Image 1 (cartoon, helix red, strand yellow):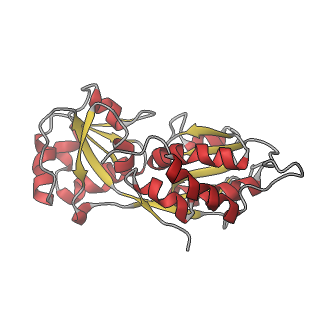
Image 2 (cartoon, helix red, strand yellow):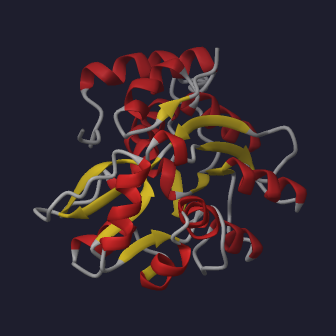
Image 3 (cartoon, one colour):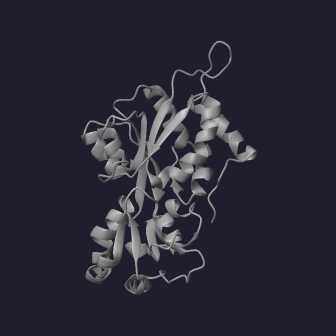
Length: 271
């Protein structure tokens, strides 16, 4: 499966229609899109590929410029979304794992009730391009692969938190595998694997697929899979709350769903 790198003309047409239905493209008296300021978005890695493919069409239709900051859903890395918000970086829309988003609501950083679930995201594995593809098709095969791997990279966000705090315990191999596992900060796990710094990498499927130099080998078995919902919310410090709502409606629209699905995510489209 290859992620969609750009919207085709054919695919863009229903997206423009979606903007009109959602009220995303209000016009001024001259018949041009009304623009009253940039929209600032913070998005975590799980939704990044879909967001990057969808953003240009929204900008063309709405006439607004969308400025983006990228970071992990959780953790203390300087570029994580919680750290960015703590520094009061500009934000209108934040897109991250739902538990982390709800934590930001509790902290007063995101408007209560503004949360909208966008996608379901699964965890998968990758190896360096051309390397042998280990078997992870069953729980027993996964255990053997993790025990045999000389090194394993995992993210500092939702998928990695599950790996280091739950998955290895479930498999009964924490003592053997955790010492050779490396938590990756401020970088994609696939990039680490591609340059040979880890033999095996675990991250959200949508974060692995766009990375050159790796082979995606498949998702975790269903019995130990952890599906994460990624959601959008409006920052309490937003200077463009109505524009933020329009962007979230667009990302949650039926017309956006095919593009989202091509990045390895399951769209949770508004009905």
